[in-house]
Image 1 (cartoon, helix red, strand yellow):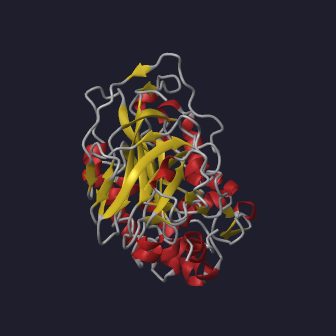
Image 2 (tube, one colour):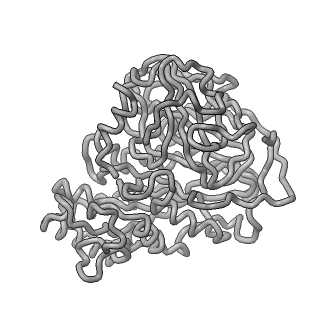
Image 3 (cartoon, helix red, strand yellow):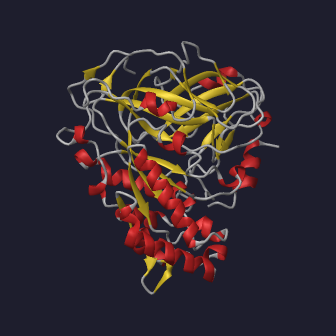
Length: 451
């Protein structure tokens, strides 16, 4: 079965933000590249390494510029002998980058060969002269142990906020399961078998004959920002994942929040999307709905470089599955305590309305109203703030449903306009922000190696 057919069959029912990158200043800061050994990231170990600050608290620092939340994915045999070209959009401009790959759900080792990174021209084609090899402990091949993620050596590469990047790699052999984010809302590419390892560095993209709407293996990209920049992780379900937004347009609510923060000086943060479609706060089968926020907290939240804040928007799928308001409230309290215990600021949000299917039964509606009433009245006692997303997007004539202009058409997921309304409901003054950027001009790019 073709890879594209499998993805379409499995996820077909799920339905450039910034027009310019950060302006380069004429004064460039030169940073010496420190090539480190391969980093194997297990649990929260990545956070301890990635979030460490240099001696100068406002000097160059690593921050996660893009990240996704993997799930148990496609059978590895479908990707064996193929090259992958995974496309994503970084949130932060910087002089170097680190690529993170995942074998989180593999029961055996995953071999990845000839990894490279480049700016995207169009489609699967790369911008001329931008491709850079990615090394892991000095080698362009890496074997990822089962259940682990790995981080590359630093790559001299000027990543620009808002400019799509492609990370290409070759999978020489079959793996049992490939870590996958199935609802990327971004087109990536897979070669046909036999294209060979040379396809990884092919600029024209002609070897990549299959387009996919998923991310395979690639789980994150960190960049070395010229001044320390903090990150906020948005944890949630398909509404955070962006179902209902436009393919390849980066107009999910996390993208809209990033736009709000982009020109906000000291409030600017890297906005990391940790949404998984069908995700539940309290349970569900990981292969179908992803790990719960608690189960993936160490990797998806603490594993992000520079993370200081976390926003949780979840619960609609728990209500649809028959969970009670009391159970959901208890889960929210536990999540808030865990985040605060890790030294993070945490924000809870009301559950957006729906009258669709099991999301709109009288029981689900009553449960949502009870949870939202608790968040409005008592949520701040268990968090650093609450954002009333439900009030921001509800139909004034019938608060149990979405405002028609904000409805993507299925009664549950929002349109790009609706996602902008959600982002507008975030009280940005409550976020930690990035104090080191409060008195600076647009980022001076720290150049190491050039391109």
